[in-house]
Image (cartoon, rainbow, N blue to C red):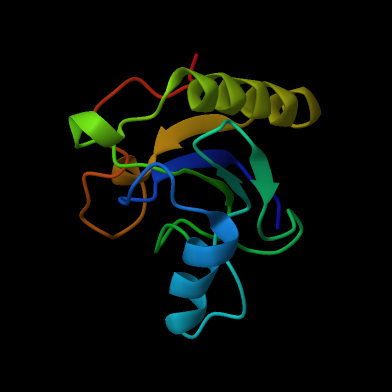
Length: 130
């Protein structure tokens, strides 16, 4: 896979949702081998590795072949579950690091790519988007 873009998601769940206990289980329940995102940023700003970057993600139907998926836990459509400052900072840092290695990458919200109609990741400004 040669990525051309980064696709940012929210988990559409509580901000304290964890990768290990929830997201991985949800994706395995869909019949996937493992988590569909390449990275997950949890509520405390921790960045966790999901799928390896050399593997195609399963995060944006119709846009997986050329994208890196980053999911921030929380629900940006609900005031009490929006991304916090630690998550936004971690996302900006991760996007910056990825663009140092792959400067051609563009940043998109899930709602802007693929074939799924969604409001993900809400309408806030995307961290790391120039």
